[in-house]
Image (cartoon, rainbow, N blue to C red; front, side):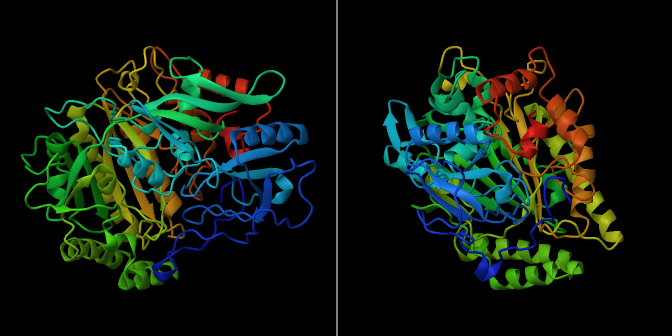
Length: 565
């Protein structure tokens, strides 16, 4: 188990119980149970509520939770927390994995107050070529708001139940690089959403108190705040956006892994890299113990292709967003100990996707960008995931993917030979651009210093990142040990002249044989060192900035105290 708390929760959300997140032990705002924290500011709603993250790995007893109505309220809270030796943790929709909000087993005795930003801090305003948005707004609402104004983004995380602030804290991303011959549209970026920030407003220490300060993208200090990994509190951002695009998404389930992930030079035709060249926006979903992935290929398509079905709302894969009863029933058997059925479960998930695409006429969809980019609802299976970004050049993408596929499949079968089935879900592979500050259109713009896709100046040829996630149920036997071996592969295999690995902040990493986020060497050396390479290292400078603006660590927790000391 992780040193940061108690054992992971074993509760999973499957089938009919896989409903939208429900409050646990919540009281209505204003209804206080027990004595409130000493001197808590009057006029700010306060209540108790347990916290549980996406897959139930992080769970707490009831914690004090408050609901600020304005950014000024957050300033009041920060100064109160400093005076009373409390910490404040922004709380959004809890759709995350890593212990960036709170650590497992946090209790009321730990002097922490959660700050629910989703009730009131969600105002949005359209500006010329930009949008000003408060950080408690959901990505669902932001993208719908942009669409109504004829605006959009190139890529975004697949779930919409994420706050803007949460996405920016961990450089949230989708999948996109330019197709061969594609010209980047004005106001768009192929990197993470952190790269779209023009300016931001944060609660910072000014030497005597906490206050609001707006940072322009060209200010050197802004670099550390663009992706702050939970060590700052942003209340508002202005994001660069461009004209909305219509997209087409074609799904295929007929290409074997031996072809899609074939080694470079093998003569294979339908390779991962070939689809990347054709469209620039792809995702492979490879269910465990199957040999035909679900490949999604998005392309910019101003007018509807003849064979495409138009869609006017997001979340169009109902067979994956609403777990079918056979999948739910078999998942229940797995988590109750029938792990030998894992290969059957993988095959069932593939079959469900393949037949569901056809039955729901979803193999070829077309419409405004948000309706194609948002496709994961809270009602899907609640699984844990590891996450890594492999920085490389466009020419080496197929090599990166092929080497991973070979290692992963060999490791999976080695565990199966021992009667262990640590992976019950799927592999997800996407490709995105790096955070090129030139895309934001601000002279002297800084690149997000702690973004996993911060460019490596010593490798200007590295222009893309291949994102890998491997999903499983948290209770799968041997899962942490499997993830540890996979992690060691990432940081050793992709560490030479053609590629390098960084952790994906919101997912699982720093594995011991028992738990994620627990390997001290990874936390204190290996992961930080991935930002210390090249002529302009960013890690130590970013930490210095974050500590300058929050020297009292009001915006921290025990995990972040180790990772970002």
